[in-house]
Image (cartoon, rainbow, N blue to C red; front, side, top):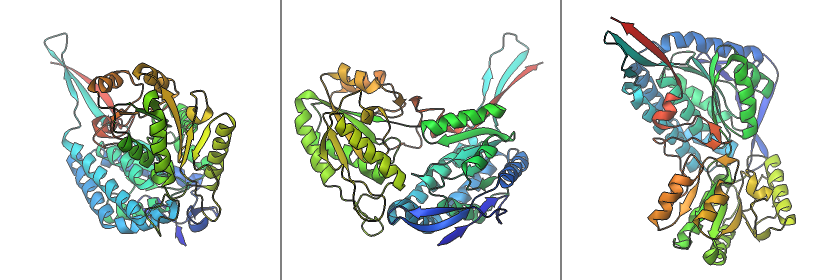
Length: 474
């Protein structure tokens, strides 16, 4: 088993307490490694190291910061097979998927390096002829980055890269489910020669995370996680009026119109729901099918979901892998059972598997209603409820009748319907005739309880800045 320490000020630091976090391979249920749980003193030391490093890092020309990011991207690419091996063992992903995640992390790092000459301010007209008004973009300072378990390598760099290019330094808390790959990224940080203290990575329990997030040296907290954790982070932000950037829960609706290619839509939706066992914020979580094709489409979905096999992806990459934990599996199965008791019809799956690991079958539920828990609450697993609709107005009304507004999907061949949905859907994203994929040149931001702020693209990069107005009389 691997045994890791925390990364502070450019070095792996000896534990100052006996507590460790045990990491379990979800495909086997067996331990795969441990990482030292950072103490409150180490969390404070990391913030202090980041604060000191930011004074010089923030003064570097952005183009020099970009050179550091490119070297880090090169180190991630070179170490992708090693990072992938570790990530596969702690996440249940296949080796190819895990290694490719490290390469995608390098790609988004290179992308943000290109913003070096594009962090633009504004010149604003004054009311007088002898005055100039400038709006400058400045770094916030130290950013606390809270990383989820589902794409822990990609999301880590999705947060770090824009923070660094804009002149901030970071303290990263990886998920306790997948912290080992984060420590391997720290070795890439060392290999790239990133200045000490610019990137700090610490695994920690919740009480120490609170110490980190409420430290007066932290100016921003960025999170990808659940709505419940988002509320907690907002409480942390109150301590020092830190800026929040929150990508929270989702319940992506897919609207399937009668005029679409039903077979292609069914295959795409089934793949979206079962990739990484449905543990994606933007995966399709509820399907609205037009009345006239409802039964035919459910038949196609049933066939697609039943064809999904579960198994250890380290042995067979064509299988659907496990959920992150035993507790997640129990919660999802209980939710399916409640849906069936409430009138849903089991079309596929829904049976708790025997044997090791935290597997759950691809599950399709028909005869669902808008008021059901399985439609209203995020499932974050391979469970798909199907509902009917009459016309586009009805579909949009049901899709929008929800607490979440992260992503949405429409399958149609009618450009009028697509344009109506684009103007009326209550979500931060709409994908037409495809399922979500978060292009990193876009802006991944949710409406309603799906978050504040967002990631990716120009607007995601600018999340990590604050403005200074300069009024010059001459």
